[in-house]
Every structure is written in structure tokens, then in C-alpha cells.
Image 1 (tube, helix red, strand yellow):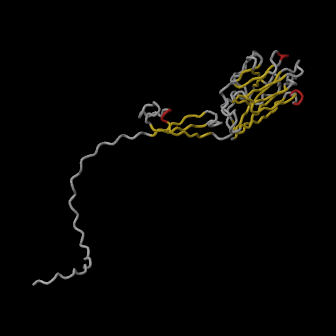
Image 2 (tube, one colour):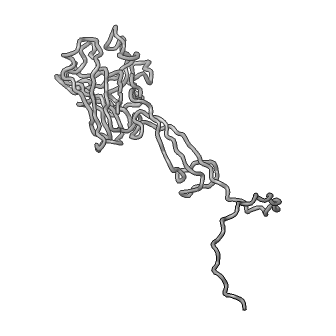
Image 3 (cartoon, helix red, strand yellow):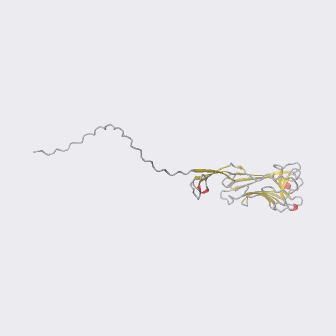
Length: 277
């Protein structure tokens, strides 16, 4: 008779790995996939940035965005429209001198004896008693203007003008106020015939009609020598949270009445404005 099955023996050791087989033949090329959606171009636009909050002394504005038609724009027309702008940066001019319209009152050129209003400036009486004059032979016989050949005068009551009498730079020509420090310097005169007021000179820097910096000279007929030009400086500090930030910058040059009579005029020239953040 057959005897009972014996117990299973222990598993033997794993044999050595066999050699790698040969690479099989390349299969046929698959069908071409569907075409992908065309990409959207990235556009860049560089424009001039006028003096203002973003660049107090002016500079360049750089806009970047996709030409995707955002904001009711037209996609893929190679024009970066306002709604497509995704990022804006500014490259500003360095701190320093700012533009002042007709700063030395050379425009227009005065050729006769009639009143000539200054380009870029407006007198508070409508221009009837404030205008340009040639320095040599007109109150400064042997002395030119502080800069160039012409200066700006304003008349007080004895010469038919108002009190105070002033001229102010026209709006939107200088720029907008930004946080930082402004320095305004103006040459004020004393005529040789003593027609300069013995009241006062006042120079003002304004932002949105608000005085942010001023300087007063009392009795210029007494403190300055005959036939002279003298620099007067005012500073203005604009804080980052000031209500005047973004206000339109203008410059006002003022003469006020004193004893009157012959001493009833103010003379101004060489208006300079600088900015430092």
C-alpha cells in the first residue's frame, strides 16, 4: 500500500536574474492631436507722466497687460487698452528743478510802451495793471533783469491797481502737489525811481488754492538798495496724509500797499521752484 505524503520541503534560493531581452520594434505613429488654443500676446505701453502725485517732477508711465479684450476692449488688436492693463509702474525724473511757466517773463517780447500781459500768468485785476517791462531804461537804467531782459510788474492803488496786487501762474501748468519739500525762490526788485512799494512783497506756493508755503518781505523800498534784484525764498513741506496732496500747484506773487503815492508798484523776476521727496 502507498504510504502517507511527506511534509513540504523548504523553498529554495532565488535564482540569478536572466539577461534583458532585445528591444521590440517601434509601433506605428499615433494620430495627430487637436490644435491648441492660440496664446494671448503681452503688450507694453510707455507714455509721458506729467508732474503730479505719481512723479512730482514728471517721468514715464509703463503699463503692461494681456491683449485679451478685458474691460470691453478688443482682443488681439495689438493695442493695450485701459481695461487690459494688469500692472503699472512709474520711472520718475530725479528730484530738482520743476517747470515754471515763463519763469523769467520773457514771453511775449515787449516792443512798445503798451501793457503786455505775461504768457502763463494772470493778474488779479484782469491784467489791466500788471504786465511785462524791459529792465534797462525802465526802472533799472543800468541793470538788466535778474534773468533775461524783462520783468513782471504789478501796480497798486496810486498807479491805478488793486490792493493787494498780484499775478499768479495759470492752473495746470506746474503739476500736482506730492508729499515732500518744495522750495520757491523769486527775485524781487527795487526800481531806481523809488516806485517800489514800502508795504510788502509776498511770494506764495499754493496747492488747490491753499497756501502751503509763503515768505513776506516788509518794506522792500526800505530794505533793498535802489536799482537791485534780491532773491526771496519760501519752503513748503507736504505730508503724505495732507489734504493738499494732488492739489494743482500755482505760484502767486503779491505786492501790498504802504504809504502809497509814488511807492505803488511791485517788480518780480526769475521764478524758480524745486522739489525733494
